[in-house]
Length: 224
Image 1 (cartoon, rainbow, N blue to C red):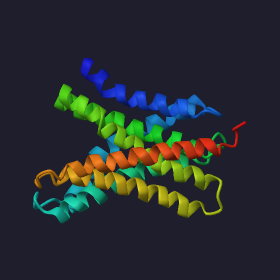
Image 2 (image 1 turned 135 degrees about the horizontal axis):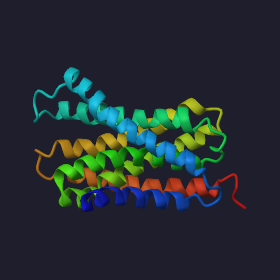
Image 3 (image 1 turned 90 degrees about the vertical axis):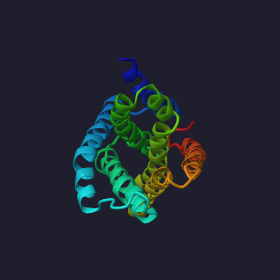
Image 4 (image 1 turned 180 degrees about the horizontal axis):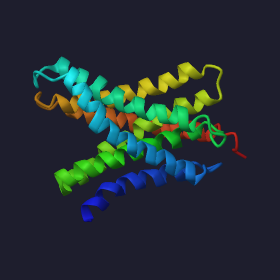
């Protein structure tokens, strides 16, 4: 039970933070919960479906191949995961009437990402124990949140733009880029010290995420 609480605590802490940052017009809780649950469900489908498929057709034949680890990080993991989150935001949340200000892109993308991270984190923590729970609370879970914020920033802009396709895809690609970079530096840990690149990419993503939140707060349609 304690392990489960440790697994979900960082997820709901981030959700609360992002919800509080929605300063001008709160989203319907039902839509937020639905987005979270869809993210959690797609996480299960990714793990047991897509990963099985891609690992068969894009197998790693050499654990020490930087190129193969690059493909695994950016295509097999990052692109597949971020595209699944993107699809939920684009086809479920973005068309909703309640999606009525740019910040909504961030909050819905983060809800989907935290649903995904919650399922993933529970599996990792149950398998790895307390050390894994503490480590992931400060790394993998915040990383998923930043990917969601960066994607949602552009999807929020897209809803109110005539250039919707380009902005939506920009959000997807930016989230994939940071997700891929984070994983890639961890995957090639056979190179001494290279893992620091993952934490640098996470730090950059956090800085950009804070700026993205502030920008959408400032241009809210409901700001007095």
